[in-house]
Image 1 (cartoon, rainbow, N blue to C red):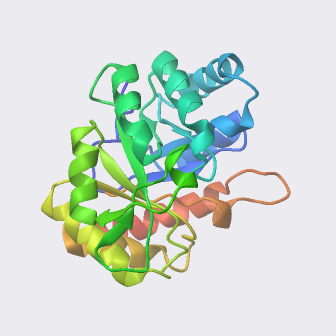
Image 2 (tube, rainbow, N blue to C red):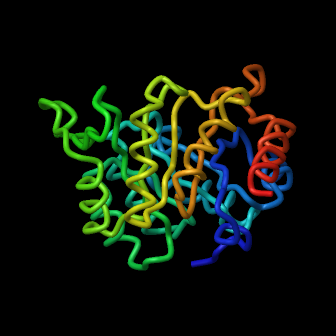
Length: 246
C-alpha cells in the first residue's frame, strides 16, 4: 500500500471529511499533508461504486484516505471492510467487533484500523458493544485498559472514542487518554469537536503522553451550503496543532 508522506511524521494528524474530489485536494494542501480525508461508505449504493470513487480520491491525495462507516453505523461494518480490502487505504474506521475482520481482510499491518468504543458515564469504563448485533443488546461495559488490550489482540491500531459530544465526558476522556498512553496505543477523539474545544481536547491527549492522536473534526467545519469542509478551518486547526507541539 502507499503511505502518504506526512502521516507518520508527527504526533497529530487530522481526520476531516471531503465533500468532493477538489475539496479533498484543497484540504490536503491546507493541512500540509498532516490529514487523512474521510470518505463515508454510507454515501455509496454498493461496494463496486465505492471502490471506483474512493480510489480516484486516493490517487489525488497520496492515499491519505480514511474509509468511514457514517456516524459509527455498525450496519456499514462489512461494507467498509470489503472496500478496504480492495483499495488498501491509509486508515479504516470500524466498530469494535469489526477490527479483527478488517485487519485480516486488508492483509497487512500498515493501514491504521481503529475500533469504536463509547463513553458510559463511568470514569475508566467504556462500552464495547458497538457492533452490528451487539449494539442491539444490553451494553457491554469494560475497563478501558481491557478494551485497549482486546483491540490489540484483534490487530487494531487505535481507539476511536465516540461520541464524545465535545467535552461532555471530559473526565472519562482523560482516563481513556491515560490508558492509551500506558499501553502505547493511538487515540482518535471523535464527536462534537470544533474550533473552540479542539485545543483543549488535543492538549488532554498530549499531556497524557499519547504517542499518536487523530482528532476527527467533522460537521463543525463543513459549509452547509456546499457540503465541503472549509480549507481555511483546516488551516486554522493545523496552526493550533503546530502551536501546541512547539
